[in-house]
Image 1 (cartoon, rainbow, N blue to C red):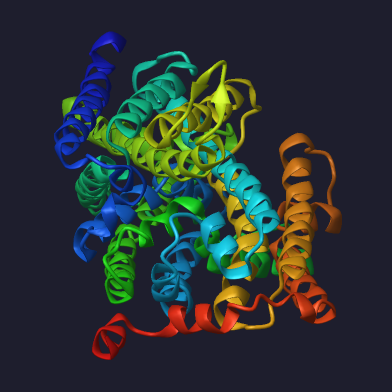
Image 2: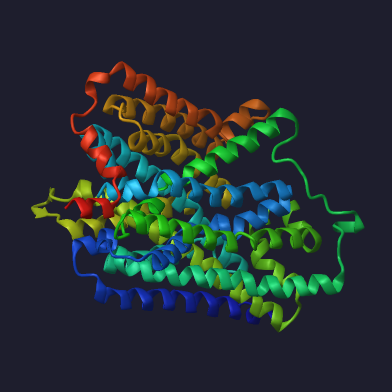
Length: 507
């Protein structure tokens, strides 16, 4: 089979996923009629559909490609990533999901302003939402470029361009209502795209009875997360803190709970999401484990993120391997499209609220028009950064976004929902402390590769110190500014914690 023919399954897979995504998004247009449809699907999305959509947007490039690459390179300790990403939804279920839905907010900045009665807090939250969204979008575009380069030999820039255009077409035309159907479809496509090839590859492995790595030596399954000793232990715990607590601060995750009809539906949605994520995350480590036997050279050459895409061809020769590779390529492209769509909606929703009502060259922007302009800005900046940024592992980049989210919105949400004493001054101080601390670490990680030892460990995984710093700062400053506790705090807390059924009974 010639190289040109080898690329055919990948081209067909990417084309079919793109066409199906646009077709489902177009079909969903008939349900998008109002501004509320664009922002939160008029709060009518039922738990099972919403859970599938959350699974579609949450399982990103890091989940589909990055986990297997990390297991290939560093061993079984990397399974902390999927464990943490799944457990983050358990924390969200217990502490945040229902109260956040009852708040009636559209976005995280909306919640912050309603809870603390401060436009300044809202402005800071808006900046952080945009920063986290862009940081999370960057690896989606990088992963798309990697996938097309591996599958069909396309130039690296083509993947980000295709993803950006498809996402803009869907998001701008139908908003949240339309994209919900797209993301639900893409979850089940991603699950199938990993499950079917994994089953075939396990059968091949069982027939080979291969249990050793290169040159016949036993495969090492417990390489530490970092270079041994207390630094490795610190990095492990810091990763756990970031993944467990960062989920609730991701703007594209939180905005999904505003689409549920009520708090009870939000909890049911989260419970179903836990099951969907648990099923999916069984699969990437299988690829990583098989890669340690059949493709160890990918780790040595720095191409571990391509393992999921290349393993079917390496283990199953001929047409069958090409077809399996095409299916995996389809799933990977669906991952970039669905996560990018969710992030674009979250960032566009925040940007549009700052753009709405303003006049530009005599033209006054309004709800949907401002939303569409916000969507363009949401994809343009990370898309350009993906073309110019240095090569960065997709799971590593997503991990940095989790660290920033855990260091900012996690303290704000938990204290805002469960502590009456939070003030606007305390919230702003804590957001700056956690945001600047984790943000500086992200900047260092993206730009520097020379430092080793404890400095590298503390900056590459900042959550273990930046999250407590944000919590302590919020509490201490709030204690010092007790007089700034909003007068409506009591009523708002009752609203957050009163079940809708009880409200109806009282009515």
